[in-house]
Amino acid sequence: MRLALGQGYSGATLSPDVDRVLEAERLGYDSVWTAESYGSDAVTTIAWIAARTTRIHVGTAIMQIGARTPAASAMTAMTLDALSGGRFRLGLGVSNPQVVEGWHGQRFGKPLARTREYVSIVRAILRREKPVEFSGEYYQIPYAGPDATSLGKPLKSILHGRADLPIYLAAIGPKNVALAAEIADGWIPTLFAPSRIRMFREWLDEGLRRAGGPKPKFDVMAACPVVVGDDVGACLAQHKPAIALYVGGMGARSRNFYNETVRRYGYAEAAQTIQDLYLAGKKREAEAAVPDALVDEVGLFGPRERIRERLAAYREAGVTTLAVRGSLDAIRLMAELAL
Image (tube, rainbow, N blue to C red):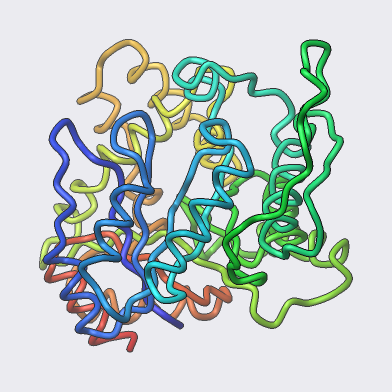
C-alpha cells in the first residue's frame, strides 16, 4: 500500500505548506494531491508543489468538471505532466449543485452522463489519434449550437502528452463509484470506511464488469485523516469539525452526497441532526453531534499502536494508496508504519 499526502482545501489565507510536502517526499510518499472548492484552485497549488519537488507524483483531488471544459483540463494535464517530468495525475469530480451552479454558473445536469462525456473527450485529446470531434448531450466539439459560426475546426493537440496519463474520479455514491471503476484509472473516495468495503466492492465490481474485467493497476486512493495522541477521545474530537462540515454543510439539504454516505453507514439519525444544526448556523452543536464511532470509522486516531493495528483494515479492504491528512508527526508515523 502506497502513501499519498492530501493537502486539502485552502483557508481564507493560502498556505501551500511545502515543508510538509518535502518531508513526505523525503519519507518515500508516492504522491501529493491538492483540492479546490470555491477558494484557491487545485491546479496552481499543485504546479507550485511540482516546481519544488523532484520525485513525488502530483495530482488534483479534484479539478471540478463544471469549472473547465474537457479540452482545458486535458491541456492542463499535459502541460503539468510535461513540466513535472511525467509526475502528474488528473483527478476529476462533479462537485455539487451548490458549487457548480452557484459558483461556476454552469448547469449541474446529469453528473454521470456529463462525467462519461468529459473523460471520453479528455482521453481522445491525450491519445492524439485524430482531430477531436464529439457530439453528446453536454459537449459538442466543434460547437454546433444554434448560434455557432460554423467556423469551428476539429483540432489535434500540438503538445504530445502521455496517452495513458492516469485519470482518477472522486466518487462516493453507487453509480458514480461504478463509473469510476469502469472508465477511470483510479477512485478517490472521501469519508471512506474500510469496514464498509463490501458495499463499495459491489459498486466497483459492477463498473469493472462493464469495463470488461479486472484492472490490475486500478488505484483505490482512500482519504484518511490521521491524528496521533494518547487520548483517543481528544484525537477523535479534532476531526469532528471536518465531518460536520461535509455532512452538514457540503451541499444543499436535498443534495448532500456526504450526508447520504453517512446514512448508508447506518448513522441516519445523526446525519439528520448534524445537517439541521449546521444549516441553522449552530456549527459547534453540529460538531458535538458527530458520533465518535463515525469518526473512528473514517480515519486513524490515537496512540501509535492503535493506529498500527487499525491500519491493517485499509490493506484488507483493498486500498492501494492511503491519502494521509495530518500533522508532520502523523505523516512521519504513517511512513514508519506503512512504508
